[in-house]
Length: 442
Ligand code: L3W
Image (cartoon, rainbow, N blue to C red):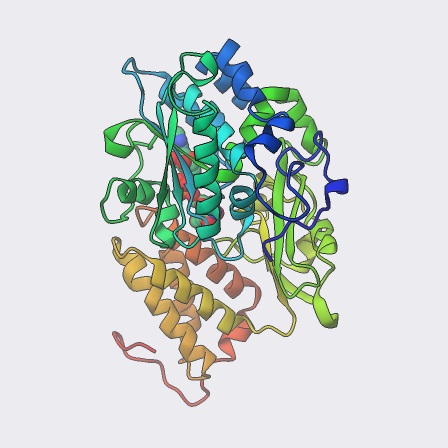
């Protein structure tokens, strides 16, 4: 699954800024190879001639949107740290806690091209007037941990990290912090709590981490892929970045898209932002063994199901948002026509229930409740009213009722599956059952 399907011949520096340096054999690109391919040129230029203000202005002009799933403007996020006199301002944190189901894009970047991330973090640290960066890495990503640790060592030895980087007077270093493999640690405020050594409970926003984050200091949290976009933007400018997506999308750049599920060639592709979903599915060889497409998730489990008729849509944040779902991480999961929805949803909601931190009541109690109802429907032992109850739960778990996006994320596939495939849920109601009494559950 976790492989880039484009060959080196298909990847060019001008059109594949994230992946053109990747080796055919999948081994890590060393510092020497990275330097031979224009590596750290953006750091040298920006630290020599730029200021935090110019870097942030370029990020805003390029319209780099966060690749962790929410699509928030990275330049706007960075501009939060421009105000205030205390120096250094705080921390730059790379969110490398990649655990969204079906998502494996950051892993490929970290295992094979860790210097691109380090370069992006140096630029982000400079823009946010930070001296210390952290990579918060998913605990199970052991290969990525090895590749990053080795690359950090190489960068330090060559003075790309540490005091007075490239003779610029800017000091910056990066610490690698591995998590304990909990999905909630990828939520930025829970991640900060975990980094500080506390339980990974999310905090209410505002204040946004950019205002007050780790140890009370301004803290910018960016996804791996977002940070990997920065060196290209700084080297070639906002117009170049916008041109990468051409007329396909208002958002600039390329995107690491992926496909998993019952397709002939699951994997990863770097394509212009706004590539139509159908084109991506074609690259993945279509559904395997003559199956037909029933539904698809655009970017991880915390997005809403779309249908075959939506395959013509551009895979960008606004287009997928307008269709009632979310681009999320941009790695599609396809559902074939022979896959029943109720067990699929039971499995997804069991994941979300297990990964809830338990801090907010709707999430702690509501998610296991959905799992019990779905399991009863799956066994054909549902009761009249269960489907309506699931619809109520999907609404009650939605935005605005919890500290973080975990429960609203879990509600999205549920609400959309109920909307598109309600009959499959009602089919699980046992004919002879009477409605269950209040307080009684499946
Ligand atoms: C300054 C404002 N900053 C928002 C910042 C905020 C955060 C970012 C997005 O993630 C996504 C969801 C799933 N001034 C700001 C501001 N910010 N308003 O912008 O914030 P938000 O609240 O829209 O979303 P979020 O809670 O950060 C939700 C995805 O995350 N997801 C899981 C993804 C998992 C992975 C993975 O494993 N690699 O990515 C779960 O829900 O798609 O769209 O930084 O501070 N006014």
